[in-house]
Structure formats: structure tokens, C-alpha cells
Image (cartoon, rainbow, N blue to C red; front, top):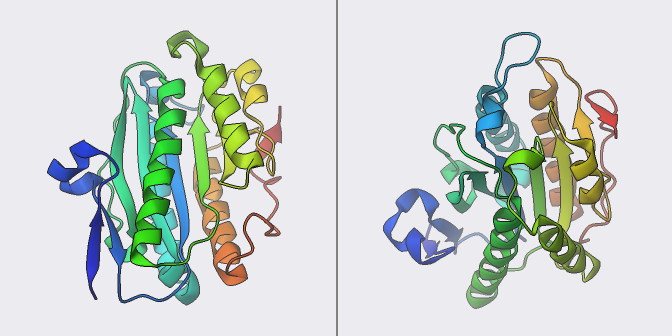
Length: 246
């Protein structure tokens, strides 16, 4: 295998974990999925079973990696990246094939800079698509998977304008946006995060909801990889077993 490094921003040149890779020897269409994860201090809160949201989030990252590794088509096509927003916005992992996807353990602290995170995600995807084009690699419409408790008290100003930018990008066929909330969630914020293909919803307050969410995402990515180039037009599994509508 021949891997070409991809730098999501200038800092990634000096941070190996934030660096992405393109496997030049792989001719398959790429199905990139950006995991945009809230790691603000409020994610330390525990559910009624005594388990914190951040600990379940770390387990979810392992769940999606293992699930995709078991699907031979998805394993060759899906590429994952992680951006966190808790106090600041950090590229935890650039886009990588699943065999090179090993994000560090996430911790929770700080406020909820949603505006910065959404704008970073848009720029991040632009750079990744430029890298695919430079290497002559076909790619499907990228997904942004957002998980947040939408804590308005810690949110940065102007987040509404960043949501509008995401909607413009989605309407233009540049990405697909999947917003999910986790309790204690601010429903008034989540209602404004609806995507074109998926309306924002909240995970049920039970210990297995985040694990089920990441299993759903891995199944959805498997369907996307099987579709191979049909953009956002993929029939997705139901989320009814682990979410509630807003």
C-alpha cells in the first residue's frame, strides 16, 4: 500500500494524529464520513445509570471501527475522520481508511463552540475533496455526523449563521448532514439543526443508546458503500429504537 498524507490544516503537518491518509493503491470510490463530536464539559454528565456521555462516546468510536472492519466493501471505501469541539475545535483524526483509524481517548471540558466546529467541518471537507481530486480518486458525497448536547449556555455566538452555511452546502449537493442530540439536550437549538435528509432527534436516555447510534451509523455507511456513487440517495435504517423526535 502507498499512503499519501493529507493535511487538514497547517497544524496537522506537525501532528501525526491529525494527519489524514489516502491509499493510492486502492481504486475504490471513497465514502468519507466526518464525526463532529461535542466534547464540552457538559458531556461529563452522567445518565440515570451512572455512565458519562464522554465515556459512551469513546466506546462508540470503537464500535464503528470494528463494525466497518467486518464489512469487506465498507472497509475499502469508508474513510473516517474526527473533529471535536469542547472549549476549542480540534482535529483528532484526519480522514483515514478504517485500518488506520485509531482516534485517541476523548475527554470533556470547556464550552460548546458549535459555530467554529461547523465552519471547520466545511473547510475540512473542502480540503479532503481537493486531495481526492489531486490523487484522481473518485468519492461519494461526504457525510457530517454531528453529536451534541446543544448546551446553549456554553455555545459561541453566531452558531445560527454556521448552521445556515451547512444547509447551503447540503442544498448544493456538497455534503449530507446528520444531527443527533444527547440528553440533557437543548431542544430549541436542536430544532434548528435539521438536515435535508435527516431531522434532528435525541437519543433515548438509556446506557446503550450511543452504542446503538454508532451501530446505526456503521450500517448506514455500509449501505452507502454498497450504493457506490449515488450521493445522498441511500435508504437508511430506522433510528426509532434508540431516538425520540424533538
